[in-house]
Length: 115
Image (cartoon, rainbow, N blue to C red; front, side, top):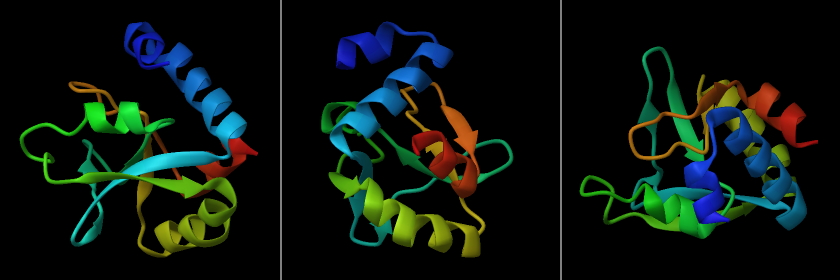
């Protein structure tokens, strides 16, 4: 899965993410002592999400080396994270890879994509 993600273009990577997240009924985030790590793109503050622990671990560079990958079930994401992120005016960064921010979606768009 990881090699397939790395070699895919952004559109293929997005589809791989959706397929894998639906199949396993979960997404992965990185956490530290303060909670979910954040990624700032040109316009938005985002919580990055990945389809697997291996993909999330790929993002753990020098700055985020202390972080830990954590799975979030899709039902938990839909019931808690979507609303919380809307209230905090955060977006989702879909499957960023080193050097790429990934597709940025609103929490609603992300939920619709996975349902």
